[in-house]
Amino acid sequence: MAANKKSLRQQRILGELDHEPSLRIIDLAERLGVSTETIRRDFDELTQQGLINRTYGGAVRRQSSEPGLNERHKLHIAERELIARQAMPVLAGARHIMIGSGATTVHVAKRLAVTMNDLTVITHSFGVATVLAINPTIRVIMAPGLYHAQEGAMHGAQTIRFLENYRVEWAILGASGLDGDGASDAMIDASEVYAVMMERATRSMIVADHTKFNQSFPARYCEWNGVDVLVSDQKPLGALGETIRAAGCVMKAKQPD
Image (cartoon, rainbow, N blue to C red; front, top):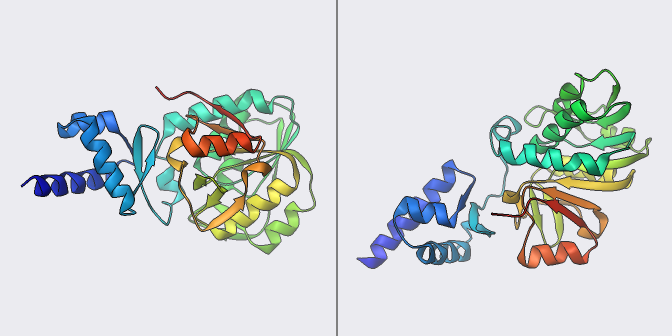
């Protein structure tokens, strides 16, 4: 009977994670009417089965692919707005920036448009270019290439050759996953563009919310010793946080509650 209850509870947890990208232990324990220790044990078992990934104080559904950009825009809005606000002081004084595609980078671009002037932004993302257009002092250079409709961005050899002609102060990039080996993306074509942007920038910034922690995707585009700043809504703790810190990457984030 106890085993059956546990199985039903764990199926409920997986069902909850299908509707919410991340869950906190304390919230889930209250929702299911069990102790936080029970939820921790469930999380441990589901992690061992490869069904979820643990995060600080919670868990996320493990997945080998990422939702489309339109779907991602609806998730973690408050966290992404916080990330965008925290990125601005770091970028103060910059005049030339490259920005990669993604939901979080669009939030950063929105904040740039209302806080900075006399800026040149090179991007392959139509979403980034569109939100920057409200500021007439920001010059947007759009990279050519093969259009990826789901991501709303240009990719491919033509995009890469174009970006190689420029040098900027900052590259601002998103990520599908962040683990001890670095930043990775679900899209191989996107990761190739991100890697070139990092090569052509004096400094690099990754912007990603806490649900990306301890997640790994097929296309790794950098290691932590190549990243200057990670901006998130929380600081990664444990082994991931130690690895990032040891690599010399500055973590700028709100401490978890």
